[in-house]
Amino acid sequence: MPVNRPTSARSLALEFGPLLVLLADALIFHGSALLGGPMFYERDTTLFYYPFADWFAEQLRAGRLPLWIPTTFAGYPLLADGEIGPLYPLNLLVMPFLPTASAFVDLRALHTVLAAFLAYGLLRTVGAERPGALMAGLVFAFGSFLVGQLQHENMIRSATWLPGELLVFERALRSRGWARRRWLVATGVVLGVAVGGHGDVLALRDVELVIDQQFHRVQEREAHHQQRGGAGDADHRHRGTDRLPRDVAEHHARFG
Image 1 (tube, rainbow, N blue to C red):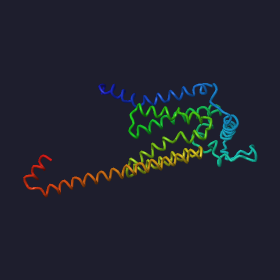
Image 2: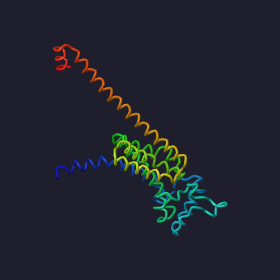
Image 3: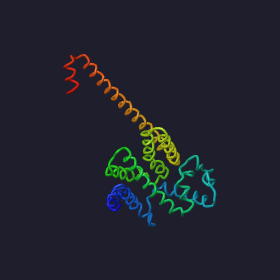
Image 4: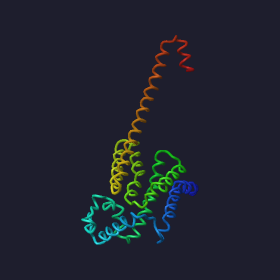
C-alpha cells in the first residue's frame, strides 16, 4: 500500500541507522590501513603476530592446517598456545583467500564492526532505546580496551564476542521451552567461536555469564515473592471483610 511506504521506510531507517553509523565509524577508524596506509602496531605486531600469521596463512594457502611451527626455537605450538588462532573460524574464512597484509587489516576492521554491532544488539535486547544502544556500541568498540589492545590479536578475538555471548544468553534466560534451548545452543556456538583467543578474557567472559544468570534468578525470586505477597494481601482483605457487619461489608465491597 503506497500510504504505508513512508512509514515503513522511516521505521527501517530508524532501526538500521545506528548500525550504519557504527559501520562508518569502524571504516573511518581503520581507513588508513584499509586503503593501504600504515596500520596500528607495536613490537608484538612486528615480532610475533604478523610473522606468525604470515607463515600460518601461507600454510593454509598450500592446503595445510598447521598446529605447530617447526622453525621457531625447538618448535612452537600454535594450537596449544592459541595466540594465532589456528582454529578460529574467521581466520580460516579470510586468511586463505587474501594476502596476509590485507587479511590482517580486514580482520581487525571486521572485529571492530562486530564488537560495535553486538554491543548495540545487547543493549537493545535489555530494553535500551536506540541512542543509548548506539552509545554502548561506540564506547565498547572504540573505548580504551579494544583500542588499547588492538595489537594483541588474540585478546581482540575473545573480547569482541563478549556482548554477543551476553546477548544470546540473555535471550535464552528470557525464553521458555524449545526457544530457550535454541538460544542456549546459540550461546554455546558463540562461546566456541571465541575460544580462539586469550585465556584471561575467556575466564572473565564466563564469570560475566554466571553473574547474568544469578541476576535473573534474583529477579525471578523477587517477582515470585511480590506475586505471593499481593495474593496474601488480597486474601487478608477478603477475610477481614467477612468479619464486618453485613451493611459495612456491602459498603466496603462497593466502594473499597
